[in-house]
Amino acid sequence: MPVVDFKDVSTEGLASSPVAEALAGLRANEARYFKNKYDHVFTTAPAAEASDVVDWVHEVLSTERDLVIASPPLEATRFEVEGTRWAYVFYESGLSINVMYAVDAGGKRAVGFKLSDGMEVPAELADRFKFARQRSKLAGTIRGSFFVIKGEH
Image (cartoon, rainbow, N blue to C red):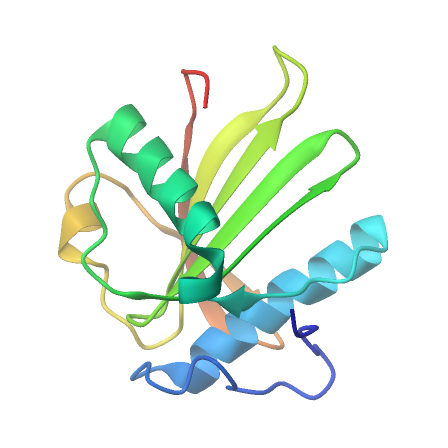
């Protein structure tokens, strides 16, 4: 799986997105966060090669909130750091979804949504979530939202 470089941001793997540069910046922003906070090297694989990750994220969305994402997934990754499992899926629309899932019962478990700069809020999320804005040197303006996972996955 290729390492995501947050110093020399590349659209490789994301080029079919209409907001490829912003999505690449968003992916690089996540890579920088995990490197700085956990000294974890963030890698991704094409969604077709990481279908187990995509399927698990989609199962969590479907079970928890009856959500189906319309956009095709482009890349995905899954890893564990400090007792928390993380899964990421990057979509052609510019959407990034992450699942944070504490290994221990009672730990933090949530789904996060991030929208690349320049994309519209996907119709399947628009009426259900409010998005807060944050600035990123790598990704411009990121709009994000989340929900807490209630079930076991």
